[in-house]
Image (cartoon, rainbow, N blue to C red; front, side, top):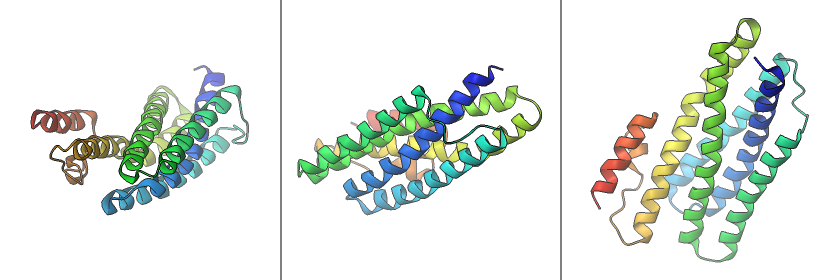
Length: 197
């Protein structure tokens, strides 16, 4: 195992989760739908907890969670760009469009988050001893939540676009009502929705 790259992955993941807190705080300013606001409020709470989990995991593995590598600085800049896009959408004074932009920015953030946690899970399986235990414990606390964040928000994004286009929309989306938490289930729901139009 390349410990330097593992350290980099964990530090970038932590930086991304920190940025995720700001993304959700800003997205909540854009959310008009009460169900979406409730869901994102819950995701904000979970993301705040994910920061604590990753911070603790870094400490357990002897990694200083305050280190900001060049990769972390890039992750930070990406998070700032997502927040800025939502602020621009809010400033345009089109609330429906700002809500869609917020969904898109959350999907972008959660796509990276989901990929990071998949890697952490794979590393946990390939590791041994205390490293495996620490990574596995973190992964098991977070992975299902990350699946939900990504797949549910993608559903919200699609359905809000349908509504904006004048097509029949299902709000909340079926990903939420059916509690989708896997790529296969998300693909089935998405396919079914697209075939309805």
